[in-house]
Length: 244
Length: 288
Image (cartoon, rainbow over all chains, first blue to last red):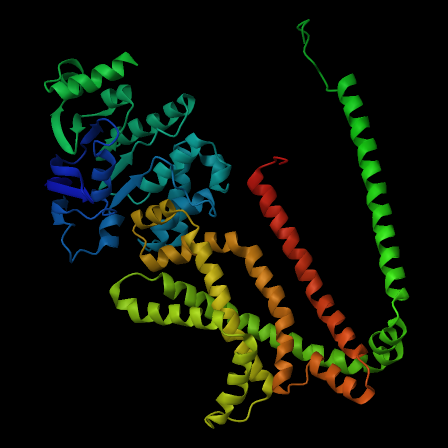
């Protein structure tokens, strides 16, 4: 059974059609990278999966459950998906450890000690052991984003959504965050990633999905997309990136 | 550093020493000017006041030391009642204000009646003068004959709580709305419910943003508890009034006023201090 299946997903904002019938399937351990220009619908697609945006048509199926069904408990569905945002969105009034363990304690009802132990272990694993009891706004951007990733994977979600997680970071900090994502890939996480970092996309992706104007125009292995793209739009997009 | 030798310790350069000397002189000069102008201002006010034709009468009927000393114990007793009313109103306002603010921010059609009621409440009680609420609650509610006989101060506390809850609810709501929506999205993405998101993410951050405004409302409440005197409760103002009636001298009012100022003063200074500290933190070290 696939972890995520999108069937004919549509989304409009007023008159603007942002997603025009998107179909996409992720099996367990798949790492799929969405590429495409700003406004192509990558972020909106991630937000519909997470039910932050309600689809106008089609279905989002998470491990066999249609979570776009109106009877779905959205809180329970969201708790099964980990999300990392471009702007980190850590809670500035909480310590790093409390950010990381919030969902475990409040949503999954783990005992406090168990949550803390796992949170500390994960933070130590990703080089953040010294920051456990710091407030999150005292950290560098790269550290904040790594904390945000730990927060997202804390309760072993079925699926991880990463929405341009390096776009707000300077080049020196991008590396540390992307290394962490590579670790997650070797750990077997199922991930759907929107990014503008093509070299990262090339190394981490099992499949690249090219979006344009709210549609998926082309899907393939990184080798195929980056060396011999078929669609003229994909060719143009990549050519523009190369010219920079 | 041109010779490549590492600079081991910092000593102020010639230029910096000059600048520091200049700044020191400038600050001495401004302190002297401030002191001098304050002194001149005080002297002018005093002289003008004393020279007014009615000054002798005014001093006799508003600043009579003997009468002040004589009425002091009764007024202080009354102030103790004000402080107790203030204490219980503050607790009541914290509870009712928070409930109102949360109710107004609940989503979903199920909560429509509650939301509408909360909106009407805050509109109404921010519009009606406190004095009228005091009369209606203090004289109207007991007349219903469903409550045991309670002291006027209790009804005063209820009236003050009703009025100030509406203001505080609006301040709290403004704070909650000032929390960036991305915080809400992050919390909901973790699977937290709407109410839980309010409780652990939105309210704690929103509250921080409006602490100076809330403290200011508290200062304002400190003096408005004096209005319960209209219900006949013997608070500081009522005690002063009684004393005025027997001596035909207004000094007790001045004294009661000064006591209210003394009561509010620590909170006023603390509010300034907290606001300044928050501003400093947000400027992160800047001097503009």
